[in-house]
Image (cartoon, rainbow, N blue to C red; front, side, top):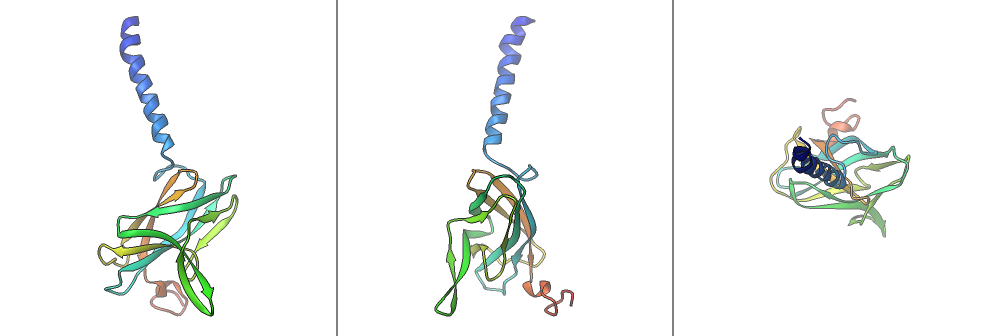
Length: 165
């Protein structure tokens, strides 16, 4: 019995524990705890033929250390970039940025006219109500899956579209 334990169960337990450590080193996956809570995610519905759109949400860092989103991924588009809008000589311009900071204990809003995740080169038109998966990648190596429904932005503005007035 001792031989069985030493040559069969011990190596199996060791491999299992190594596998668990490796799985944990890849960061946070869907359903796992992550210090950043995502509120009200959505992807903007665009008119037919428009090849690009954006994802918006509020990020709340409930942890004790500052984090930053350093990239994002999604299977719905050819390219995914982090963007912001800046005013240049009276003209609002969109530009790519390296990171979106989320301070410990703070909130960062990704909203139209500000910070957002740009989805460039959509593989197919998105439909209202469709759920788009966007993975946020943080500077600590963690990853967070966000499920963002596609919405008409007019539906979210009082007095516009079919939303509440």
